[in-house]
Image 1 (cartoon, rainbow, N blue to C red):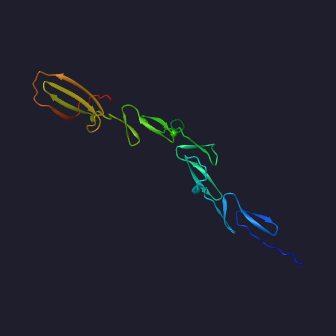
Image 2: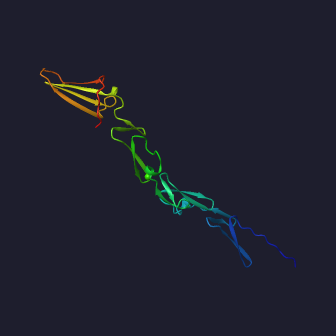
Image 3: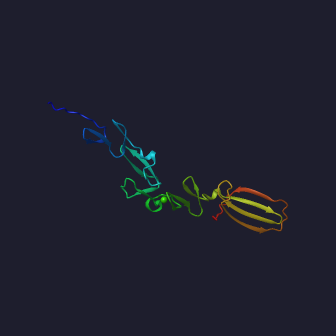
Length: 192
Ligand SMILES: [Ca+2]
């Protein structure tokens, strides 16, 4: 009697399990059977069975998945497929994370830059509150019998720094005025 050869096929990727008089196919891990002839990738990310650290993103791949730590976090262990994500201390580990005239404060998942005293944040740069003396302005206030000379420095009248002095006068002044005039005299204006 002629030997009969039967050729059976299992889908890729799967294993063929022989049984008396028959066989069945078992899809490889990470795949699932949708028909006798087809194994399809399981998307662990969309099914929520990935087990990723909450500070990471799940990335599906054929037959598997991995977790990528979000920005501001680093994977531990470094080469783990499903790492724990730990905070990056940008103030220590990242050079020049803040611009000059600023100091760095580490936070979970991020960091913050704060300007030193007498500087203010403009964009992501710390600029001096009093940049040039020519930008200072006097506030000239005249009240009854008393003259106040106030200096306010800053930009276009922003009262970021101030210094004032008053002078008694014998002259009777009838009006109260507040006048902004350019600081042609170049008075120093301390930051407060
Ligand atoms: Ca951080």
